[in-house]
Amino acid sequence: MLQQQNLFVSGRDGYHTFRIPALLVTMKGTVLAFCEARKNGGGDAGDIDVVLRRSFDNGETWEPFRVIADDGTNTIGNPCPVQDRETGTIWLILCRNAEDGHEKDILAGRAAREVLVMRSDDDGETWSELTDITADVKRPEWTWYAAGPCHAIQLRSGRLLVACNHAVLDAEKGESGPYRAHVIYSDDHGASWHIGGIVGDYTNEDAVAELPDGTVYINMRSYHGRNRRAYAFSRDGGLTWSDIRFDDELVEPVCQGSVVEDGQGGILFSNPASTLREKMTVRRSVDGCRTWTVQRVLHEGPAAYSDLAVTRDGAVLILYECGEARPYERITLAKFPRE
Image 1 (cartoon, one colour):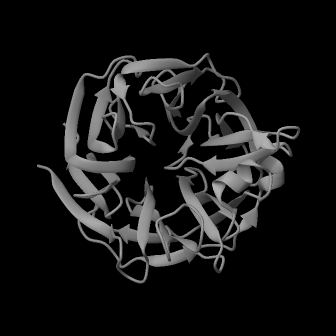
Image 2 (cartoon, one colour; image 1 turned 90 degrees about the vertical axis):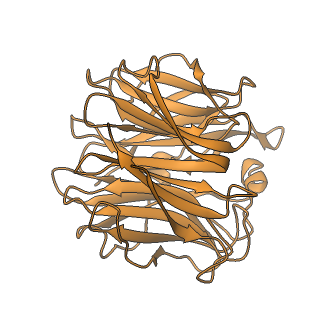
């Protein structure tokens, strides 16, 4: 049975718009729902905080939201959570820019974009101060930078792997080249972070999952003009990637999507399955993301970003942007049985 409830409603609680959802189910079973809380408008820059709600009953009921990252009137966003199975620490990768640091200014090299991390050792109850890791994960010639957006993963090897993207400045032209997807990783439980493999041109907002054979699958927003999701594979934990391919089954309006392991050897994928930002759909693959045999439409109307998770009792959760007239009216949590 499909259940849906609105976790963040734009225009309420002192914020103009809530956007960019991210989900994490902890080892204890706590469900963490993150998003950006945009104070004065719906744009990607300005006074933007990161907020969190928690559920202790597999997404049935929720604590009130609270702000966990706030840099005054500047932008803090792109929440990307992952939990280390060995230490229990939850790492949250974020990005920051000045209040007036719009994407066009960052791409032109006129404004900075930083990469931050914070941690929780108590299932999201309390959080550390922000730590700047920009120098470790962003090359000097990179301008734009974004983590995810959506959850990161821990490979079976123990590596923490975060899907990110960037653009490179052409100093002579005073502008950046095409977006490129890449990953960052930590092999020491979050003590240090490093740049992994770069996937290819004209890709950005991306998500990763580990397949049953240990191959890492990356699924990416594509600017190749085909309205299809791009994807690639890595057989060395994200250090190098195959050539980009396009999935004709995964129609997209040039938007974000999410992937997650379903706990039964399959992979779930969500996105607005249209050439417009509408028709939020979840699909399942059981052959390593080569074909998608099952799909379910959750919302026929306007919809955009999403993130997927699976609870400890096997239910599928998806936190997604949707509305009746526009995609950013609310962030809704849908829950349904995995089968």
